[in-house]
Length: 239
Image (tube, rainbow, N blue to C red; front, top):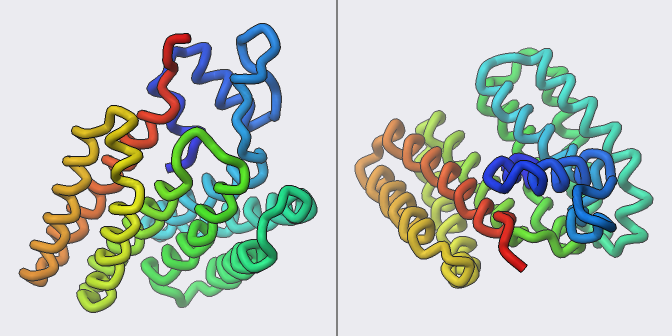
């Protein structure tokens, strides 16, 4: 889930302020708008949004839509690269993003590619996003982007019944979750944290039973919980 989609849980004025800040770089509804601005550059946010859309469309076998999202990502990356270097994004992270973007362009043009392989190419664009977003100190922990990325990987593992790869991805998901769990609880997210814990348990249970359908369902539930967690960090708070 991108940061744009989180603002539906806030008061309308605040939601629009943040959404417009990301999309257009303008102030929101306060006097000077400073607190309404999202720190994430609009082209960076656009790439993450497009990658998620491409993932969903790939699983629907909509190659035309994936090609369009790949084009949007390439164009946004071209605009963003110079700013990224100035902002302090590491060369390695930017290179990984560029390679993933190009990989998606190639994959989208390959009509013989399976839906899951195309979806993996789309999801690869999200792999370096945590490191890149962290440069801008966004309101929600960038680690949540990695939880989203890994959750989508588990979905693909389940669709392929690749339980060996799924085990590695669930282990990585669990490790990354543990590194941010305390921060979630501190943000009044104890219930959401317990819910995410439960999705990890459910994924491990499904793996032990080699139950691909249950594994996919648990991974999708984990993504839903990440949405809930993200909202904890952007909900409007009183002064």
